[in-house]
Image (cartoon, protein in one colour):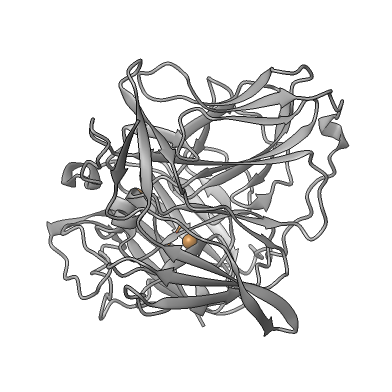
Length: 459
Ligand code: C2O
Ligand code: CU
Ligand code: CU
């Protein structure tokens, strides 16, 4: 066992700081302090990787649909930061995007985020300032918004998939390369689930477990499947799935890009000690076990058919007959160093663009919205990928439904992130029902931070 201090890890202490009255309901303040964490590593000589045994990965934050939350983010580091709540459709001022919705939080300062999650499901949080450095060092946490009515699972398991880029001594490698940023991104070499290698979690034998898988990686597109056929996909990017989706398999694994989430209902094996495994396919490698659910206890004898479908979230459904079409092109940009007018960190390159315009830096002075949408109206956004790389395109503040692609049939899922394939042209539909300036970017952070970003205004 070795221990290393890192420049910037994360830890959060959740504590009741008092009660606030807000919107007529009471919410307690949870304090989240961003601070240096200490992790211990153990060599795994079998495959040359190191295993991460953290003292403090970012905690899973819990809220309830329709209940106010008050999160006080305290910046205990020397760098600036801002916290974003990925997938939550909340007021723009609480969205955590520096210069667009708030000023960056300086070291020693705090920002109070107060919102009421309208939707239940699996969401997550990460900084949107010093995004590359802070996320690469582990500041990516899961947020579970519980249904107002308990859907009746016997267990709940969060799996936060994260790579780290470490050298042989347990220190960090540079968290991106220019070569990677200009192509598919720079991948980590230590793949973890909840900062652990192939952790095992106990759940009641024969019970029904909600397995919440979150890809909070900065780069990797995971190809996932399960070792059991006793499972069903029940939610996608937070929102309940209303259609029957095929279970992924080794031949047709589920592609889940950075920022995306999938919830499975898993029926635990009947006998004690048996496992249901979350598996990943990696290029040129044997199937890898990311995490295991292990049956314990006497056996509950539940059946997947016992589950009622999850109630739909209250996202408005677009009216395609009246929708206006808007075009967005994701491509390269002439190389150059963008101006960085802010405090939120630049990678020093500009490789990417949306509609030929690279995001010009943190403060992005003089960069206007990519489009202005009228509140309450329906739109179809046509997303064209002009590059040979995949881009998980994420829109803040609004939910959308993929409707059409030139390459594949898209299931009509309610989502916040669209994984655009090589040369894909995909159409997504939405209702512009949340006013504000909403960040719109690729969730491969190296792409986001080298130009593949912008924002959409809803007035
Ligand atoms: Cu996960 Cu701009 O966000
Ligand atoms: Cu987001
Ligand atoms: Cu990208």
